[in-house]
Image (cartoon, helix red, strand yellow):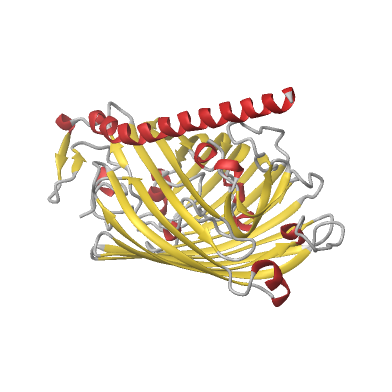
Length: 472
């Protein structure tokens, strides 16, 4: 009885601390816009014809009118090297030069300070015997500081996520999703939260003349040179609050430990190589999971035009999954991104393929994705995502009446098709606030019908807040 009483007391204390932390996060969200407003320096800023505050004086290599989110979306870097120097994406990944990237920017002294951030508060319902319902929040917040140094540019960056606090019980429901663990067991039909520390990084870009750049990236936790920008940071997925089913075959390494990357860019082509610790983060999301550099990757990125970006990457991951630490994985990804800007909007699209090959078993798993987000009439968003993803037998571990062979192997290929719409409002200064929703339809082989039902479906309604100056 005493032991059970102590457990109950511990659970009540844990719930009380979670409530306090959630309240603190909500207060932070409310106070942040006022803090951002106080940081601005009116005496050093001007206004464009739309009334947005703009820096009055800038370095010739960093015309602030060219920075994403400062004026209209069509004011973007013209060269791939300039896009790299903006450093507005996670890790060292790239999107098309014309891609709009909302942010807040300040220019005290010699530093250029940037704030990015997106948060979703979601209400999710899923049908079928394995579907779940939950209210939870996802998102991230990035602070970046840049300055010119001799022969180049220095960038310092930190990215945080509230998800260890706002995603309770260590995952949120997502049909057919798998990867990582919760309470020591593999997660099935659920998505794990991101770590609180998503990135802490320093970058140095050495200019080798007008058309060449040598780049260095070091991060106790960060994003090695694998794949395109992760789903949480891609413009083509900017309004979709749900993780991709192919996450662990395409971009799960975007939170890796002990990352070092070197890259060489010439005109429209960049080649990179990374070393990092290959184990994915454990289920305790507030800490760092550091270890020796035992994995590597290489990536080729090409930006042939303003609106296009393509990459191919290959990686060797040493024991990425905690449940099977001796299973090394070779991962290949290839992607094409396109952004089409038009008056008062744009269309951002990504085509992505990811492939895992487990070296101990020889098993191969593929994930295919096509997604697009359209912003039109300034404040309206329409988006869609179609996926085909291979699932392993681990998805059904523990399911009643299911006898699976020993070890992890191929189970089935499933499909998910999502369609959503959102309307943006400007209720809070320096925040773009959106009310939206999406529906997801799943397809699976017939033998999974007794477990998932005939037509499993998911519905998500959300409130999205994004740090940015007003559009238009």
